[in-house]
Image (cartoon, helix red, strand yellow):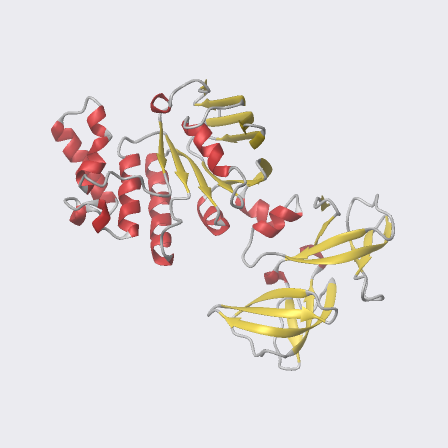
Length: 372
């Protein structure tokens, strides 16, 4: 039985559906990330699970129990907010102890739990200080510690790392992952940062305009997106999209080409060929699946077996240590991004040939759905 289950959940504000027909399930002890652009409804879903908003339609089950009419305090969940929500007049120790003071635990037990939680979150040296005197990373550690000190079975995180710098985010990600592993809690983690979701979650829900766009394993969403939106949202840098036109459809697949370049056609071995010649589609290829060859050298592993072959000119080179990101423009003016391992001899203005193997190419129809 799933630890958490939403069935056809709606949330309406007046005549507006902020959440529409959302269904998802998270196994006991699972880590589910809900991602999507700002305003897609992901935080509203989290507030519905926590009981901070009422459900307009549908059912929410926690541990097999329908909790639509159950108050937040009785749902057995802990929630960490983006803005920390700490009590400014209390010390760190008092903030941590506050949730326990509502239970039957005696003072000595509470102090032991506070010390144990502070040790786990590296807060032992700031227990007597107030939140406003702490750095953002420490304040977030207090917020997470206060929410987990009662060892809840269900932990909800609403963009908890949004206010942290890069180093603090990495440390906080490790801490949340450790807590999940140690407590075996069921986690629902809302974020706009797809890299957080890919790094931490064992299941990802992608939302768009209040609805679930796709649900799956992290690498499944990366390698096998159902829609152009998911393909573009997952991955950094995002997938390249180029307009193509169907030349012909046959039992061996679909032959497509670039409208501006007759003769540079290629065949994709697709099972579906109920498309007619002349149909406009969108080709998708990830930056790391493109390879370059130029008179300066270079070339990726797939450069010798291309499915597509484009002529382009480098516009900007970003050396990033183990990777190089190349921003280029094709001869017909289409912007593309290439990501190659190591350093690159290319410079701004370099002319290059860009190739990609057929198995890496994704094709989307005019509605944004993947053609498989």
